[in-house]
Image (cartoon, rainbow, N blue to C red):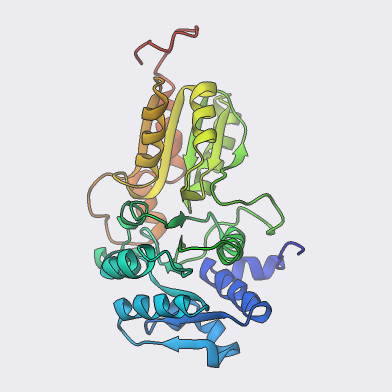
Length: 335
């Protein structure tokens, strides 16, 4: 299939969730077994686009997220492919038992589209900030966990989720993310990081909305400081791309992770686990929500306050670059 594209006007007018809604409708036209479920958030999560086109395959269970997960599990057992959507905070915490037992334990073919991720619904406050969802979901067996960087990557993730057997959790933002990809026509594969910028001085590993910020920081540092920063878009949190992380450690020996999530349990923790298994020393810094509840405000303001925007990444890179290594192959060195 040719890569999906939109006009420049459409690209700026569509939120990430709307890309997902359009992609789901395309799947619905191709595959009659695809059904969609909402917990009274059809408009907010954009899954209502599917309901308008396929009303007989669309189910609103009301404000009952836990029931929605159980119903989806039953539909999957019956041979359907349910896509269920609600806010990330509800999908991962309110429905944790049902996600764990009904979907993951039974390893059913259900796809969860978790919207309003991280602090993207910033003005709604802590009850709607999903800063722990990656920590929860990546610990569930059988569950593939994905955090796309923009709308086009969300389209790729939705299609890839349909094509694989088993449960998938796709985490997307509420708002109008910066455009990283102009079309879907690029190499996307679950479990394989995408190199956004080549570099040998330091590697920034980012996911979600932070991938664009990391690329912006790398371009700035190249021009201002002469630093060559490798940027990896780690869209799949589980299974994580161990090979890309290990290569980054060997090549650059300085690693920074950036995520719109608590630094405990998310991308930073996943990368740290790979580095620990590798047994090689490196300078390492985790940028994200530093084990506190995030402030309330607009998403871009929160990202600036907690240091996960391009300016925060630039400051962190300059600080980590002060960590020197001996220019030899002795991996017993201390940082």
